[in-house]
Image (cartoon, rainbow, N blue to C red; front, side, top):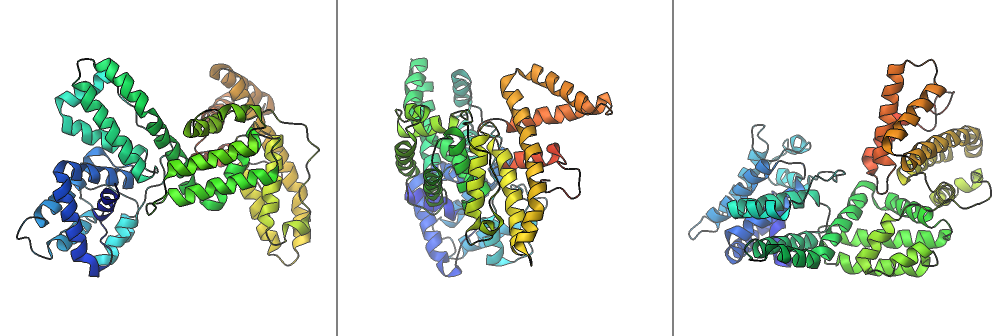
Length: 481
């Protein structure tokens, strides 16, 4: 497994320190000879489909063909010593050609102003943002076997492309294992006399691995989108809304532990097993939170099933708590002020458990921004006191609108939800033309259908909320905008 991962890294467009050129060529040629063209090609498809997750199958195909051709030519007996390095350089030059059939990436142009090794390193470092809307749909057994029997190689390559690009944030060993078991299943079952029974048995065996692929991709995507600090906050809000009776200290401990797991396992250069690390984390969650009946039920399942169960739990009902006040100004400007804000947002979240995390996140960012600016001003206390009244009023409006929108969306069938939304907007804005009311209702309905759900896409929803919710104050400027 490790040798295959090493190979996949080497066949990207970067070739590291020039002093290691011969070593790199030798390793690639050893792997090429050991794996053969078919497995070597599969490795190239997996790596480049992950790297260029928005590329077309044809674009990936052109790049893979070039990479395999490079290995075939430069690993042949009698090939020149500089064949491999020159070929890799030629690939980086070709990728900078506007007419190149290789995958496109928005950052290519900035890499192409460089030359030689610097250009190759730049190209190799390019990354697509995580896919927030997966497109992979597994075909029916009959469709799979028809495609496999028509052209097994094309079927396999297309599957590797689609699966790898959709689960591009899943740790590489998991993706490799998952794709290998799937293609093995297809080969066995599509040539079996009892195809249906074969698929039932093999899919059941493969289910835990596929679930690990899906869950690790979801978690590592959030890590890639948020970064370490923001992910801790995200996890804390999740726990506080699913278990509002949980202690803040326990919530933050679990959020930090979970983030540490992803920091250690989501990167390329790691030997840590994400399944083992997540299993250990689930044990800690169950130990801390299983006083909650719903968490306790989830914890009866196997580790990854328990993790999915916990992440899929609907938010709990809010609990009765005293009225919440913003922290005192002097506390907010002390060292470690973000902890005060996080504790405050934890209190907001467990009082508004039905307000989705992506909505809470906007509040956190806005409050943190106000605090940062005021605490670096000449008179922090005065600055914060002036902002508090406006911030409280805007938060009240924002939370009310978010709770109403998402509450109705999750309570009523979609058609009834839209009708109620249109009626409410007409009542609130009687001077607005009917056509405009319909447009606003459509925008808000689209926001709700994507962002009022569990595991809503964070980057997309942040942009959508900022656009749709609009101004929340009568003054100018608004704090929450």
